[in-house]
Length: 146
Image (tube, rainbow, N blue to C red; front, side, top):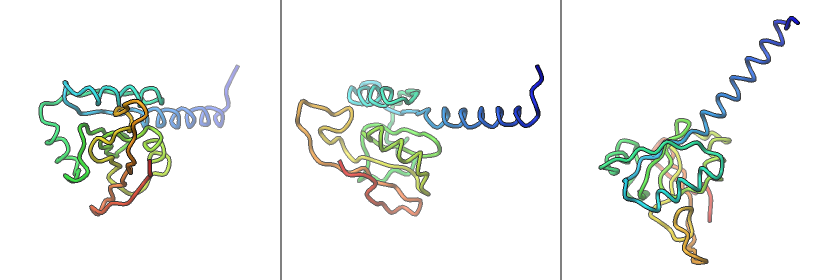
């Protein structure tokens, strides 16, 4: 059985698209080894289809500084995926939306550790919070409300 050149090209193109989608779903998380809520957040994103590599670091603030995270948006862990930075307890759905929309931005962040955010669950206790878009020019905008 011979495969035509056009079919081989279509198969190769499909493999590239699938490979790109898989790479886009690979998340690297920088966190303190002792942080329990970070581990719960990792479980959350894994349950939503992300492949996660955890890097335990002694100085998470240095990671945030290098990634350009402003102090007012800092949380306990910083992640990278698809050329974006993800700061804090961002819901997996927001990460998927970011990767689908591909805005010109540094990434998204959930400031602090709001109760009810992924990894910060405590029964029915919830506090409203926003996922913020970190624009390339340093400004921010609301990306999602929770």
